Length: 205
Image (cartoon, rainbow, N blue to C red):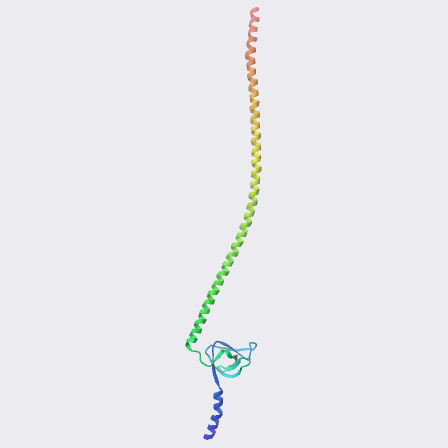
């Protein structure tokens, strides 16, 4: 009986010693085969212990079994013989948190840049409208200046004509005044003589 127990122990010990445990350094994908084209069985978190079932050194894959009993293949470079220390886990989590914060900050900056880009696009459109309005105003201003020049020429012409009419009227008034004066002189000279002749003719009677 003891011999049988000893024999059974000798048969079981190699199998027990053959079972090797390793630890996952980073979160890794457990797949049904050796390659990304195979289906995903599950994700194994960093620091998890797995049982090594088979190793393909040429392809760089190792077949493992999780404590929950899931079998699959993972990349051998993500396995380590020593368990990951608590400090390493804390540092890794801090790194993840830092990267998450940086990602949020970068996302916020991206959103701000997109808002700034939208605001600049609106400002550019407004400047284009102002530019087109300025060109229209410049064209209107040119037309107004041209009209003003024509009006000034018309005013100068009318002023010249008015001055000519005033000068002509003054000459006519001067001539009329001279005629009246000459007529008055004529009457002043001729009428007394006519009266004197009439008086002489009456005295002769």
